Length: 400
Image (tube, rainbow, N blue to C red; front, side, top):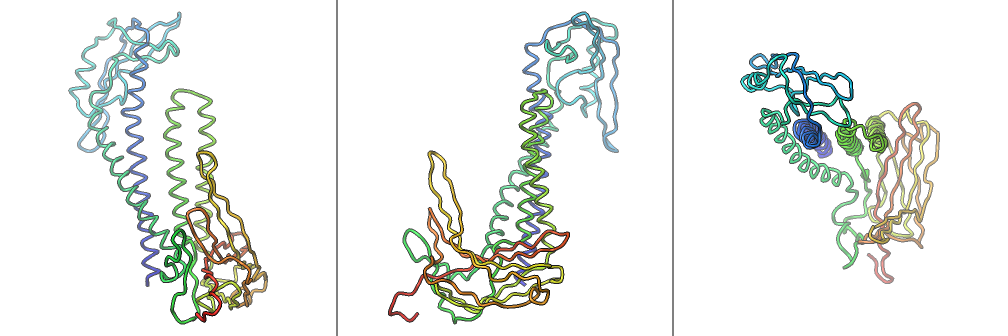
């Protein structure tokens, strides 16, 4: 029952996270198109050249927006000469062309007359880039405010669901009872005996498949959305070198989405269930590891189960912190293509006496894990990791 609640919490957190990202991306895109980009063009136009132009057409376009509203656009076409060539433009002001206020559009277009001579501003670098009135769309403020509200709500939801997602992921990585995770040293932690009867223990997966897939989807969507948003400004300015750099970042986002899709397919793989014959393990312990699969184990063509000890060391190098991870122990428990043995079985596992127990401090850690690798034809393989806790050796003369 608790497992179903956990999966439901993960899914609801993921949906909320996606909604938050959608609001954030849409809101930022609106702020970019209605404020950042127009204001940037407005600032650049300060150095544009003033050129005489002739107004050739004046209209106020009426475009239905909803059943009860419309968008009114002051459409003024004007022609001008630059470097001996004829040019024409319809840009009236910077930003969105239209407005929901008919009076603003009518008054803006009414300030000009057909065949009249006026001054327009033309970019010295691109003669086809011109503007008739050097100002921002005066009616863009209300729409911009809505986009800013959407971006703000998205940011708040993003932070809230990010915290919820991390808590869900941390719950998924819990592998032993809380009694085995008590502090035993002042500067580090190592697990102590649970005090429970030494009975068989079902080992939980270190990461839930749903959490991994959701995390990759969120990372891929956020990364690709933000890079694409920045890319719009770069494309507008036609800066080729930044476009080349951004294309590399865009490929990273696409790779994240591909991995997210791959991880999503892995969710539907058979799920391994591991059980250890002893609850408290020490260096030198021998225990029976049994396994079975929830789902169609016939899909698995080859099964490999590996016991590993991993050392992780963090150290400072200049102003940055580096973390290195390497295995200090590896033992193959199962390596078999036999279907009946794959579906369910058990093996005796021996842990060496002269090895390091589980330990974690601020700079280094020693963890023990069991990796289950199942090869499936024409489908993503099973790659699940299960952490186990190896207790510190008992002092001589004590019987536990």
